Length: 246
Ligand SMILES: NC(=O)c1ccc[n+]([C@@H]2O[C@H](COP(=O)([O-])OP(=O)(O)OC[C@H]3O[C@@H](n4cnc5c(N)ncnc54)[C@H](O)[C@@H]3O)[C@@H](O)[C@H]2O)c1
Image 1: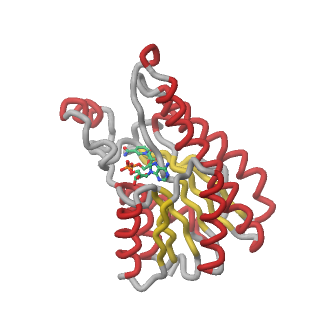
Image 2: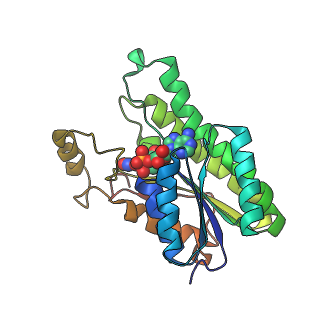
């Protein structure tokens, strides 16, 4: 098993892409800490992981809170006797054209998507450093690479995640800890479920592979980067978008 003996923390693991990542890593041998603000959803993910005969814990954590993320990392390290993989997946959108965008919409998106990634990374690096092995995967977005009208806050947060990823990769390469970003294109999850059919068709017309992605497409990329197979890859952005950008 590619990930036997590894302990993985997945944020936003209650649904969508985060849940698919948690189940994928578990199916390849990892124990899972399923972290989410929605405890019921995280608990269901943990239940499905346990059904695969892996260890799992569901944790209610708001990634915006320094205190909660520090306590999260400490608790996982103690309970699981290790902390090897972190997937910073929790994310939100608050879309709007810039002239109408409210300060709270800017702050909320930057806080969850960028500060949340900083908080969890800092908290978990402490424990990865102890064992001189670690894999961090940050979920960015095609929108962070290309920009998107109506998503200035989201695009800024996801572009910020890419710069953050490269900096951590440089700082921690000497300790055998890799840090990469996965930038999904349009993936069918609750986050994109509300897009009108016409908008979906327009998006699909710009995707060379001719379809929206599924959560599993993203999970496969994360699996690769967190396994030993991805051990010589750091500071990269793996775009999982059906060829939308190339
Ligand atoms: N769906 C897409 O098309 C797409 C495309 C590119 C990137 N992404 C990114 O992938 C990630 C997952 O997206 P998704 O579509 O599965 O979203 P989703 O809305 O379906 O799931 C997000 C999960 O994160 C949790 N969450 C939100 N705020 C949190 C917080 N403060 N602390 C802890 N957990 C929190 C939610 O409760 C939810 O379970 C996000 O970072 C998103 O920006 C999604």
